[in-house]
Image 1 (cartoon, rainbow, N blue to C red):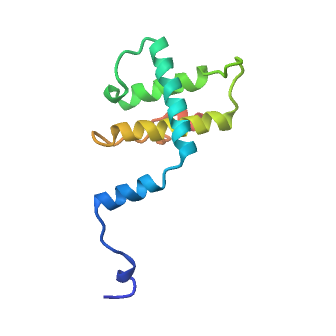
Image 2 (tube, rainbow, N blue to C red):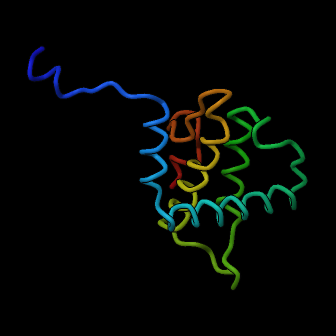
Length: 119
């Protein structure tokens, strides 16, 4: 075994899962919860009845784009671009976990996701 080979060890899905859970940040989880709650409320108010997990890439991207453009603070002011980007990232992390068992979705795809390229 070479020195390079010794740098890599075998692992299991359980060990990877434990590592991922240990590295979770409380503030990140809170952000994900807040932004997902806002997106869910937005979808209800716009009468989007399909579950997020049922949406195709284009529909989901379109709804996220509309959400990012229409969302306002409680005082009716617009969010600044960095806040919108952070919110978008929180939504992407949350939604990606929803889809991870069924299909691969890349909401950071610059070609297919107008939301990412706009902000």
